[in-house]
Structures are given as C-alpha cells and as structure tokens.
Length: 271
Image (cartoon, rainbow, N blue to C red; front, side, top):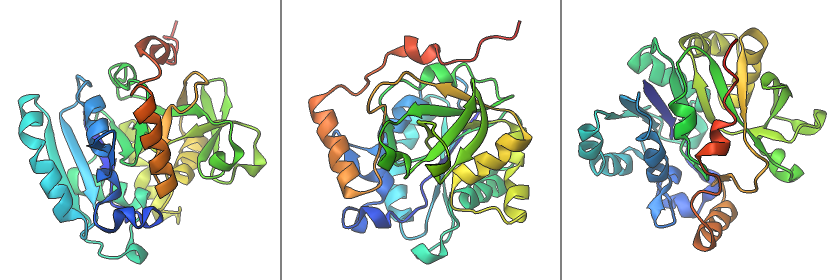
C-alpha cells in the first residue's frame, strides 16, 4: 500500500521557527516530526511506497532528509519518493487537497487505497493496529476527543452516528461534538477517486475537512473513536504548539496509550 504525506505547506504560522527549517522537519524530542511518523509507518506490514509532496522552496531540505532514510527504508521493502509541486511562495500553494491531487496525478490511483497524512502532527498512540487492520476497501478517519473549544475551532470536527461520519465541520460552532479529525485518513480507491471531482466542482483545495464532509455525504466514512485521553495528538502549527509538544515529551512518555485500546477502536467485524 501507499502513504501520501502532504508536507508542501510553508509553515507561515510557525515563523520564525520555519524560516530555515520546513515545518515537518522541525524537531520534537530530538527528532524531526516526520521521523516520528516514519517510525509508525514502518510498522505497517503492507506498506510499499511513501510519497511526500513538498514545495519547491523546501525541496532541498527534504532531499537531504530523504537521503538519510532511503537506504534503511529500502531494506524494509519501502520506497521513499519526494514530489516537488513547483510552488515557490505561500500565496501560490495548491492546498492539501490540491497536493493530494498532484500526488495522484504523479503516481496514479492506488487500487488498494492509501494513507493520506499531514506531516505536522505527532500521535501519542501506536498507529500500527489501525494500519495493519486496514484492507483498502473502506474510508476511515481518526476521531480524537478535544475538550478545549479554542482547539476545536482550529480543527475539523466530526458529526457522528455511532462510528459513522455524517458530516465534518470546519466551523464547529454549529455542533456539540467534541471529536476532531486530524489530517490522517485511510482512503479506499473510490475515496481517492473522489478528489478530482471534488476539486473540479469548486471544492476548497486547502482543507481536508471540506473534502471529507463531501465524501461522507456520498460514501461511507467510518471513525476510529479513540479513548478520551488528553494530548493524544500534538499538532505543531505555531511556535506555542511546538513548545507545548516539546514540554510534554520532555516530561512524559512518547505514547500514552498502548495497542489494546487502539485495537478497541476498530470496527466490529461484519456478522
């Protein structure tokens, strides 16, 4: 299976930290954010290819980063590929959905589905139980509890009927849900195939939440409802976010959940 990592943003809200370092390569607990994600992805037994979308300005830094990982990943049967989208300035960004289309145009539509993920979050639970249970035929998202209204206002908020996603709100004022959906999606070939029609119909290219909202209205999208444990996801989008993440990991463990509660979020097998 494929992993599509969307790392082409310019990290303007992270300035001055990102003046010299792309946001996904900023260090937390002594390592780049993307390294933490790679640790999780290499535990995915079906993974064969990782494709990373980057902007033109940051491409040299990502090439240097990739050179340090490509050989080791190769010994595990995993290819690592960088894709420069050619964008040189923030005002010209393709947006995360636009960059997903860029990757699909470059790679083709995977018949067995793919992981689509941002590169600016660190997850404090093992992702392998979710990845290794994925068969590529369904669309799945994370549903993480966020009690803070201000943080919810900066996230895509899920409206759920049991495990089924019925809507996704980028303006959460109209919902009482506390379940947020980070940029970490498992999409079937059919779900990935909805990207181009969504953009061609004028869908906003800069938020996965709007795409997911459209997808949930026409396709089945299921949520992995993780326990209501604090700080399961550390989103590093501003200097304050980064300092918060660094402080938590200086004082606490990398993972605050083990595999068992993560497996418990898997859907019940069909009877």
